[in-house]
Image (cartoon, rainbow, N blue to C red; front, side, top):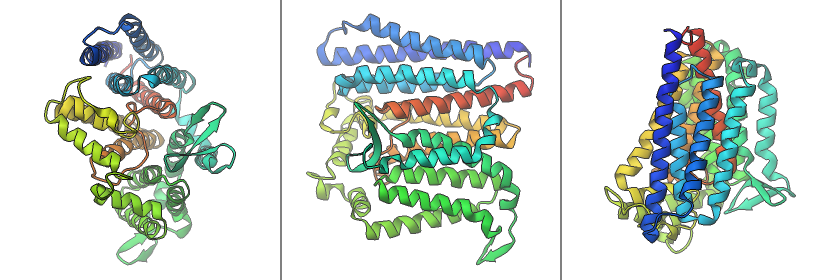
Length: 432
């Protein structure tokens, strides 16, 4: 392709970004009309802020990653915009903070594109990234700064500010896993000793998968955080499978996680309680199962087309701005709106996997796969928890739920994927 292909991609992206801005602004107006029948008085400042952030993100991409995928950024901005509208609808007191964190997230996206020009350079920091990621993951265990919120010890508090270090840890661990498997994929793909029907590599090379299993179970037990443990373990299992092309590793990883989770459920009350609520939330509908029951009612009330923006009653769910924001979307936009959100995530995941398939270098391929897996598995875990497909966990819905640390980490992931896409396009001669 000629250099015009890169220009065409950015023009396509600009059109999609403008559409994302219009959808977000239209939804914001409809929410206000649904509640008060009046146009919001801060509409003009809101439009200027939204369009300003969109333009900054697009111009940064046009300048720093001009050959990158044109779909990723608009989808992420649209998800972020819809999430902000619903946060402002159910928790107006948090709207300003979420807007601030959105600006910080966009700044992190620009900084990622500006500072990381060659993603392959990150492969040098295998153990540094692993140590930093595990260190961040363990920070909530510290007695002074570690904070227990809603039964999970996954937060740290520094003065008036709270932060979830696991969100940054997932990016660092994705880099570490991808780098480790790039160096050892051939050793891990070669079976030298047999255990039942499986041919496994040397035991010393199996250490990382066992370590990942131990860490995931430790997090689940110590921090009462089922979501993060499943997310980190799934990340390593998927990358191991992709690197070695051996599906036996997926089976082994699944067995290890089930064994560990079953043991934890039999020993620790909070794990068994999550499973009991999942199986029968109505048994404790006035207690620990209250939110799940209310989320089910909200989704049922939404029907096919929804109650309408600003016309539902999602605030009866206590954590609707965070863990249960998908229930609010399902109530007011119905099955059609909830399905559109799911399609947005499928498009985001598809674009990320396309970047992985097109990448020529092993590290680039594995890193793109890992980052996409993080977003996809996290979305599945929380949406599946709200709809009772899996036990509910405390992860956020990427780009949609309230939370500064989540937005920051996800925009860094977006920046890395865009850099990988741009690097591959340039290597294939698609940037002129």
